Image 1 (cartoon, rainbow, N blue to C red):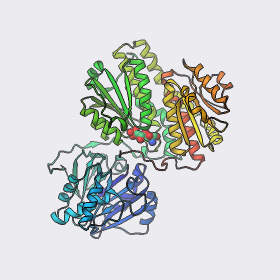
Image 2: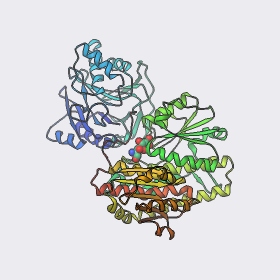
Image 3: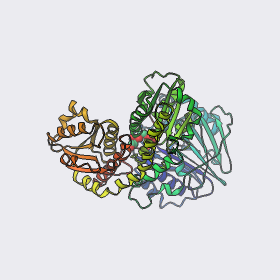
Image 4: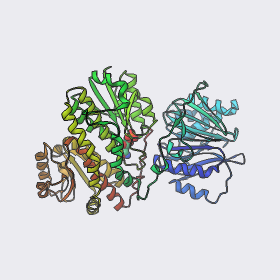
Length: 610
Ligand code: M6R
């Protein structure tokens, strides 16, 4: 969580920082702040609330500075108020830092510093680090040494930027566990938590590695280990453009991203569907083909929406490739000493590639000797770089906190992976061709669902005042039910539960009365009759049924209060289509209730803390 940005160059820095914070705001929006070096002194402005509040503070100031650091916060330690907002400073207000991550041993360090007479203004772990750096600086009088020494004493994670009036010509950046990207342009550098704040200035970037520190001045940068050994930096070119970061006429990023799905699916398929050969080409996995031939078990690990796509992946891979699959919450996997065999393959799924729990699960699996792969959206992200090989989903930047296009692209990639694995085993070319052909039709079918948005909006209006929702599905549609419920609760704050439809009678059925909308994903597959029985059970208790059904299904009309048709497809591909009405319904309910769709309360896009 949290977004940080630093700039050193020849532009008026407050504008650069504010623009950068706006790009990073999706990472956290509890407070925002900046520190610039104006006439040799540190000027700090910070404010609870969105970047907009900070911008209002700056508007009447005439700054000339060309060096500064800034932060947008997702609160961990201390409530989101002005005092806890970053930047934080040492006791002399000569050293300022912005920090993404958590200093785990902050409490004991704080006690030691307090015993020596140092005082604190905020409740944050970050201020402890600032004061520690200041305390060390008093002895060594060298900012870089002070930063490196302080970082050797802390445990936890950090993406950190340091600015000081003692050494006003530089910004020091350091990374452990939280991402940092250094943008390189002529006589200017931008350092940020992610590339979205950099692309406006340059497409040349260096990704800092864990335990790396960068010393950046006006015309050069040096990277080192924390032990002062110089490291070699590889310059990468960003595959990103500004237009991808704009709303382009849509009211919200979430809506734009929902509507992008026909294109993002085509991007995920591009060059990978070998229809004539009845197979799939996933270039990123070439180096591990042999491992796949001998794999005994796959473990899919992820969080949130990505975990839901892992569940669909389990069904797909077991169905098409007959390889046992386990799906693990990354946050549980990392702490329960999982049994991993050398011929297991662990696949981490993550949109951002920065989720702390998923990254830790990757490291845990690597330590235990597994081959670890990634299914990731953000190119060059920590998970993409930490894994042995992987598949990019190519969905482009996803800015809305609620994941939409990343989910459908993850499903597309998992389907392709399952087909590829199936073809290495018993899946016939004829069967594979049938699935691949249908996969290629999915983007056009998804377009048809989007054309029905007004109907979904009307349903959203009708039910938006409900306090609870149930989402039920079976088989491939069970994870879709979970995802539909997650979408609704995160952006509308309405309580929603996803359940396997048949499990309803083991408990949740007690919740059903005339005020409970129940969303059934009731598409025509081999268990269609069973789900009709589950619908009957809800109707018998006066629940209101909203059914996602297969087009031309006349029978369902007798069962549902509201009906949303989706085009017919193979049951295994249904989740890619069935989730779209649920995304739209959640979106319209959120808008109807006046919620902040793209930046829902308490959430952030990348969860880079445990
Ligand atoms: O970037 P990741 O896919 O690793 O993120 C995982 C979850 O934090 C994420 O899917 C979250 O649940 C979304 N807000 C869901 O819309």
